[in-house]
Amino acid sequence: MSASVNEPSHAAGASASPQHPRKTTAARLARLPIWLFCAALIALFSLQSPFFLTTFNLSNILFQCSLIGFLAVGLTPVVISGNIDLSVGAVVGLSSCLAIGLQPLGALQAVAIAVAAATCLGVLNGLIVEKTGINSFIVTLAAMIGVRGLAFLFAGDTSLSAIDDSLADFGHRSIGPISVISIGFLASVVVVNWVMTNTRHGRNTYAIGGNRDAAVNAGIRVSRHVIGNFALSGVLAGVCGVAMAADLGAATPSYGKDYELWAVIAVVLGGTSLRGGTGAATGTFAAVLTLAVLRNGLNLIHVSPFYILVIMGLALIGATIVDSQLNRRRSRNAD
Image (cartoon, rainbow, N blue to C red):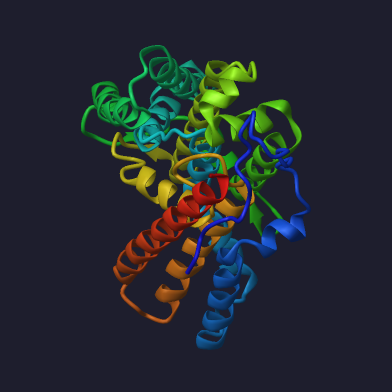
Protein backbone atom coordinates (compact mmCIF):
# COMPACT_ATOMS: atom_id res chain seq x y z
CA MET A 1 0.00 0.00 0.00
CA SER A 2 1.46 3.27 -1.02
CA ALA A 3 0.87 6.34 1.07
CA SER A 4 2.76 8.94 -0.86
CA VAL A 5 1.20 12.00 -2.32
CA ASN A 6 2.55 12.85 -5.72
CA GLU A 7 2.79 16.58 -5.04
CA PRO A 8 5.70 18.86 -5.79
CA SER A 9 7.69 20.29 -2.91
CA HIS A 10 6.74 23.92 -2.52
CA ALA A 11 10.28 25.18 -2.07
CA ALA A 12 10.90 28.86 -2.45
CA GLY A 13 13.50 29.82 -4.96
CA ALA A 14 13.30 26.61 -6.95
CA SER A 15 14.37 26.85 -10.53
CA ALA A 16 11.01 25.68 -11.75
CA SER A 17 7.94 27.75 -11.08
CA PRO A 18 6.47 26.44 -7.82
CA GLN A 19 3.00 25.01 -8.03
CA HIS A 20 0.35 26.29 -5.66
CA PRO A 21 -0.62 23.70 -3.01
CA ARG A 22 -4.28 24.29 -3.83
CA LYS A 23 -5.71 21.54 -6.01
CA THR A 24 -9.16 20.34 -6.77
CA THR A 25 -10.47 17.91 -4.23
CA ALA A 26 -10.97 15.22 -6.85
CA ALA A 27 -7.39 15.52 -8.09
CA ARG A 28 -5.96 15.27 -4.61
CA LEU A 29 -8.10 12.30 -3.64
CA ALA A 30 -7.21 10.49 -6.85
CA ARG A 31 -3.54 10.68 -5.93
CA LEU A 32 -4.02 9.22 -2.47
CA PRO A 33 -4.03 5.39 -2.57
CA ILE A 34 -5.09 5.39 1.09
CA TRP A 35 -8.61 6.35 -0.08
CA LEU A 36 -8.69 3.29 -2.33
CA PHE A 37 -7.52 1.09 0.53
CA CYS A 38 -10.19 2.57 2.80
CA ALA A 39 -12.88 1.91 0.17
CA ALA A 40 -11.66 -1.67 -0.23
CA LEU A 41 -11.86 -2.23 3.54
CA ILE A 42 -15.38 -0.82 3.68
CA ALA A 43 -16.46 -3.15 0.85
CA LEU A 44 -14.80 -6.14 2.53
CA PHE A 45 -16.25 -5.60 5.98
CA SER A 46 -19.70 -4.76 4.65
CA LEU A 47 -19.75 -8.20 3.01
CA GLN A 48 -18.42 -9.92 6.13
CA SER A 49 -20.77 -8.35 8.66
CA PRO A 50 -24.39 -7.17 8.30
CA PHE A 51 -23.81 -4.67 11.09
CA PHE A 52 -20.94 -2.78 9.48
CA LEU A 53 -22.96 -0.36 7.31
CA THR A 54 -25.55 0.42 9.96
CA THR A 55 -25.97 4.08 10.89
CA PHE A 56 -24.94 3.38 14.47
CA ASN A 57 -21.73 1.64 13.47
CA LEU A 58 -20.73 4.25 10.88
CA SER A 59 -21.22 7.04 13.41
CA ASN A 60 -19.20 4.96 15.88
CA ILE A 61 -16.35 4.65 13.36
CA LEU A 62 -16.33 8.40 12.85
CA PHE A 63 -16.17 8.95 16.60
CA GLN A 64 -13.39 6.38 16.99
CA CYS A 65 -11.21 8.21 14.48
CA SER A 66 -11.90 11.65 15.97
CA LEU A 67 -9.58 11.57 18.99
CA ILE A 68 -6.48 10.36 17.14
CA GLY A 69 -7.67 12.52 14.27
CA PHE A 70 -7.38 15.75 16.24
CA LEU A 71 -3.74 14.95 16.94
CA ALA A 72 -2.93 13.77 13.42
CA VAL A 73 -4.51 16.77 11.71
CA GLY A 74 -2.69 19.14 14.05
CA LEU A 75 0.55 17.28 13.44
CA THR A 76 0.26 17.46 9.64
CA PRO A 77 1.43 21.10 9.19
CA VAL A 78 4.28 20.46 11.65
CA VAL A 79 5.52 17.53 9.57
CA ILE A 80 4.99 19.40 6.28
CA SER A 81 7.32 22.10 7.62
CA GLY A 82 10.00 19.46 8.22
CA ASN A 83 9.50 18.93 11.96
CA ILE A 84 7.71 16.52 14.27
CA ASP A 85 5.87 16.77 17.59
CA LEU A 86 6.02 13.71 19.83
CA SER A 87 4.60 15.49 22.86
CA VAL A 88 0.97 15.56 21.68
CA GLY A 89 -0.03 12.38 23.52
CA ALA A 90 1.29 13.69 26.82
CA VAL A 91 -0.42 17.04 26.20
CA VAL A 92 -3.69 15.12 25.84
CA GLY A 93 -3.16 13.61 29.28
CA LEU A 94 -2.36 16.96 30.91
CA SER A 95 -5.19 18.89 29.24
CA SER A 96 -7.76 16.23 30.15
CA CYS A 97 -6.64 16.37 33.80
CA LEU A 98 -6.84 20.18 33.79
CA ALA A 99 -10.31 20.11 32.22
CA ILE A 100 -11.58 17.85 35.02
CA GLY A 101 -9.39 18.87 37.94
CA LEU A 102 -10.06 22.60 37.59
CA GLN A 103 -13.84 22.27 37.42
CA PRO A 104 -14.25 23.97 40.82
CA LEU A 105 -13.35 27.15 38.89
CA GLY A 106 -16.20 26.43 36.48
CA ALA A 107 -16.44 23.96 33.61
CA LEU A 108 -15.91 26.58 30.89
CA GLN A 109 -12.96 28.13 32.69
CA ALA A 110 -11.38 24.68 33.16
CA VAL A 111 -11.72 23.90 29.47
CA ALA A 112 -10.25 27.28 28.50
CA ILE A 113 -7.27 26.79 30.82
CA ALA A 114 -6.70 23.26 29.48
CA VAL A 115 -6.64 24.37 25.84
CA ALA A 116 -4.57 27.47 26.66
CA ALA A 117 -2.00 25.35 28.52
CA ALA A 118 -1.77 22.96 25.56
CA THR A 119 -1.31 25.91 23.20
CA CYS A 120 1.46 27.36 25.37
CA LEU A 121 3.24 24.01 25.39
CA GLY A 122 3.08 23.93 21.60
CA VAL A 123 4.47 27.44 21.37
CA LEU A 124 7.23 26.51 23.84
CA ASN A 125 8.20 23.51 21.70
CA GLY A 126 8.38 25.72 18.63
CA LEU A 127 10.42 28.38 20.37
CA ILE A 128 12.97 25.87 21.65
CA VAL A 129 13.29 24.25 18.23
CA GLU A 130 13.75 27.57 16.45
CA LYS A 131 15.87 29.45 18.97
CA THR A 132 18.25 26.62 19.86
CA GLY A 133 18.41 24.74 16.59
CA ILE A 134 17.90 21.42 18.39
CA ASN A 135 16.14 18.81 16.30
CA SER A 136 12.39 18.79 16.94
CA PHE A 137 12.48 15.03 17.56
CA ILE A 138 14.71 15.54 20.61
CA VAL A 139 12.87 18.62 21.86
CA THR A 140 9.41 17.07 21.68
CA LEU A 141 10.61 13.72 23.01
CA ALA A 142 11.87 15.55 26.10
CA ALA A 143 8.59 17.48 26.22
CA MET A 144 6.64 14.23 26.03
CA ILE A 145 8.41 12.94 29.14
CA GLY A 146 8.22 16.24 31.01
CA VAL A 147 4.57 16.98 30.24
CA ARG A 148 3.53 13.47 31.25
CA GLY A 149 5.32 14.10 34.54
CA LEU A 150 3.43 17.39 34.96
CA ALA A 151 0.15 15.53 34.48
CA PHE A 152 1.06 13.08 37.25
CA LEU A 153 2.20 15.92 39.51
CA PHE A 154 -1.15 17.64 39.02
CA ALA A 155 -3.45 14.63 39.30
CA GLY A 156 -1.42 12.04 41.14
CA ASP A 157 -1.72 8.42 40.09
CA THR A 158 -5.49 8.24 40.48
CA SER A 159 -8.42 9.03 38.22
CA LEU A 160 -10.07 12.44 38.47
CA SER A 161 -13.86 12.39 38.38
CA ALA A 162 -15.98 15.25 37.08
CA ILE A 163 -17.94 17.27 39.63
CA ASP A 164 -19.79 19.20 36.93
CA ASP A 165 -21.86 17.20 34.45
CA SER A 166 -22.10 20.02 31.90
CA LEU A 167 -18.89 19.00 30.12
CA ALA A 168 -19.95 15.35 29.87
CA ASP A 169 -23.43 16.40 28.77
CA PHE A 170 -21.93 18.47 25.97
CA GLY A 171 -19.58 15.66 24.94
CA HIS A 172 -22.49 13.24 24.61
CA ARG A 173 -24.59 15.54 22.45
CA SER A 174 -25.10 14.76 18.81
CA ILE A 175 -26.59 16.27 15.69
CA GLY A 176 -28.52 13.47 14.12
CA PRO A 177 -26.36 10.35 14.40
CA ILE A 178 -23.10 12.32 14.54
CA SER A 179 -21.62 13.33 17.91
CA VAL A 180 -20.46 16.89 18.50
CA ILE A 181 -16.92 15.56 19.03
CA SER A 182 -16.96 14.02 15.55
CA ILE A 183 -18.33 17.25 14.11
CA GLY A 184 -15.52 19.14 15.82
CA PHE A 185 -12.98 16.78 14.28
CA LEU A 186 -14.46 17.19 10.80
CA ALA A 187 -14.39 20.96 11.28
CA SER A 188 -10.70 20.79 12.21
CA VAL A 189 -9.95 18.90 8.99
CA VAL A 190 -11.76 21.52 6.91
CA VAL A 191 -10.10 24.45 8.68
CA VAL A 192 -6.55 23.06 8.56
CA ASN A 193 -6.96 22.01 4.94
CA TRP A 194 -8.21 25.50 4.05
CA VAL A 195 -5.33 27.16 5.90
CA MET A 196 -2.76 24.97 4.15
CA THR A 197 -4.19 25.49 0.67
CA ASN A 198 -5.54 29.03 0.70
CA THR A 199 -3.34 31.16 2.94
CA ARG A 200 0.15 32.58 2.83
CA HIS A 201 0.98 30.65 5.99
CA GLY A 202 0.10 27.39 4.25
CA ARG A 203 2.14 28.18 1.14
CA ASN A 204 5.10 29.23 3.25
CA THR A 205 4.84 26.05 5.33
CA TYR A 206 5.19 23.97 2.16
CA ALA A 207 8.12 26.14 1.09
CA ILE A 208 9.89 25.75 4.45
CA GLY A 209 9.50 21.98 4.38
CA GLY A 210 10.58 21.74 0.75
CA ASN A 211 13.74 23.81 1.15
CA ARG A 212 14.27 25.77 4.35
CA ASP A 213 17.38 27.62 3.12
CA ALA A 214 15.60 28.73 -0.05
CA ALA A 215 12.64 29.87 2.05
CA VAL A 216 14.93 31.97 4.24
CA ASN A 217 16.62 33.47 1.18
CA ALA A 218 13.20 34.29 -0.26
CA GLY A 219 12.46 36.41 2.80
CA ILE A 220 10.02 34.05 4.49
CA ARG A 221 9.91 34.48 8.27
CA VAL A 222 10.54 30.82 8.91
CA SER A 223 10.50 30.82 12.70
CA ARG A 224 7.10 32.50 12.91
CA HIS A 225 5.49 29.88 10.67
CA VAL A 226 7.18 26.94 12.42
CA ILE A 227 6.14 28.18 15.86
CA GLY A 228 2.62 28.78 14.54
CA ASN A 229 2.40 25.17 13.38
CA PHE A 230 3.56 23.88 16.76
CA ALA A 231 0.96 26.11 18.41
CA LEU A 232 -1.75 24.62 16.19
CA SER A 233 -0.59 21.14 17.13
CA GLY A 234 -0.85 22.12 20.79
CA VAL A 235 -4.35 23.56 20.34
CA LEU A 236 -5.71 20.38 18.76
CA ALA A 237 -3.95 18.20 21.34
CA GLY A 238 -5.68 20.26 24.02
CA VAL A 239 -9.03 19.87 22.24
CA CYS A 240 -8.43 16.12 22.08
CA GLY A 241 -7.78 15.99 25.82
CA VAL A 242 -10.92 17.96 26.58
CA ALA A 243 -12.92 15.72 24.22
CA MET A 244 -11.68 12.60 26.01
CA ALA A 245 -12.59 14.10 29.37
CA ALA A 246 -16.03 15.08 28.06
CA ASP A 247 -16.69 11.63 26.65
CA LEU A 248 -15.60 9.70 29.75
CA GLY A 249 -16.49 12.18 32.46
CA ALA A 250 -13.12 11.56 34.07
CA ALA A 251 -9.40 11.93 33.42
CA THR A 252 -6.12 10.26 34.28
CA PRO A 253 -2.55 11.34 33.49
CA SER A 254 -2.17 8.26 31.29
CA TYR A 255 -4.74 9.50 28.77
CA GLY A 256 -3.19 9.87 25.34
CA LYS A 257 -0.45 7.31 25.97
CA ASP A 258 1.00 6.16 22.62
CA TYR A 259 -1.44 8.43 20.76
CA GLU A 260 1.51 10.29 19.26
CA LEU A 261 2.61 7.07 17.55
CA TRP A 262 -0.81 6.52 15.99
CA ALA A 263 -0.90 10.16 14.93
CA VAL A 264 2.48 9.88 13.20
CA ILE A 265 1.38 6.66 11.49
CA ALA A 266 -1.77 8.39 10.22
CA VAL A 267 0.18 11.40 8.96
CA VAL A 268 2.66 9.24 7.05
CA LEU A 269 0.04 6.86 5.66
CA GLY A 270 -1.93 9.91 4.57
CA GLY A 271 0.88 10.93 2.26
CA THR A 272 2.78 13.54 4.26
CA SER A 273 6.52 13.19 3.79
CA LEU A 274 8.57 12.99 6.98
CA ARG A 275 11.16 15.12 5.17
CA GLY A 276 8.61 17.88 4.75
CA GLY A 277 7.31 19.80 1.77
CA THR A 278 4.37 17.58 0.82
CA GLY A 279 1.16 16.40 2.39
CA ALA A 280 -2.43 17.40 3.07
CA ALA A 281 -4.95 17.30 5.91
CA THR A 282 -7.35 15.41 3.66
CA GLY A 283 -4.81 12.61 3.31
CA THR A 284 -4.39 12.48 7.06
CA PHE A 285 -8.15 12.29 7.46
CA ALA A 286 -8.26 9.36 5.02
CA ALA A 287 -5.57 7.53 6.98
CA VAL A 288 -7.26 8.09 10.35
CA LEU A 289 -10.56 6.90 8.89
CA THR A 290 -8.86 3.83 7.43
CA LEU A 291 -7.36 2.93 10.81
CA ALA A 292 -10.77 3.26 12.46
CA VAL A 293 -12.47 1.18 9.75
CA LEU A 294 -9.83 -1.52 10.06
CA ARG A 295 -10.07 -1.71 13.84
CA ASN A 296 -13.87 -1.66 13.82
CA GLY A 297 -14.17 -4.23 11.04
CA LEU A 298 -11.77 -6.67 12.67
CA ASN A 299 -13.75 -6.40 15.87
CA LEU A 300 -17.05 -7.10 14.08
CA ILE A 301 -15.71 -10.25 12.42
CA HIS A 302 -14.15 -11.37 15.73
CA VAL A 303 -10.52 -11.07 14.68
CA SER A 304 -8.04 -10.23 17.42
CA PRO A 305 -7.45 -6.46 17.48
CA PHE A 306 -3.75 -7.12 18.00
CA TYR A 307 -3.51 -7.95 14.31
CA ILE A 308 -4.00 -4.28 13.58
CA LEU A 309 -0.68 -3.52 15.30
CA VAL A 310 1.13 -5.92 12.97
CA ILE A 311 -0.71 -4.64 9.91
CA MET A 312 -0.07 -0.98 10.68
CA GLY A 313 3.57 -1.62 11.54
CA LEU A 314 4.09 -3.23 8.14
CA ALA A 315 2.07 -0.52 6.42
CA LEU A 316 4.16 2.21 8.05
CA ILE A 317 7.40 0.55 6.95
CA GLY A 318 6.02 0.20 3.42
CA ALA A 319 4.85 3.81 3.30
CA THR A 320 8.23 5.03 4.57
CA ILE A 321 10.08 3.01 1.92
CA VAL A 322 7.88 4.40 -0.85
CA ASP A 323 8.30 7.94 0.53
CA SER A 324 12.09 7.51 0.58
CA GLN A 325 12.14 6.26 -3.00
CA LEU A 326 10.01 9.16 -4.20
CA ASN A 327 12.27 11.64 -2.41
CA ARG A 328 15.32 10.13 -4.14
CA ARG A 329 13.54 10.35 -7.48
CA ARG A 330 12.71 14.01 -6.87
CA SER A 331 16.33 14.69 -5.92
CA ARG A 332 17.58 13.09 -9.15
CA ASN A 333 15.06 15.05 -11.19
CA ALA A 334 16.12 18.27 -9.48
CA ASP A 335 19.77 17.56 -10.33
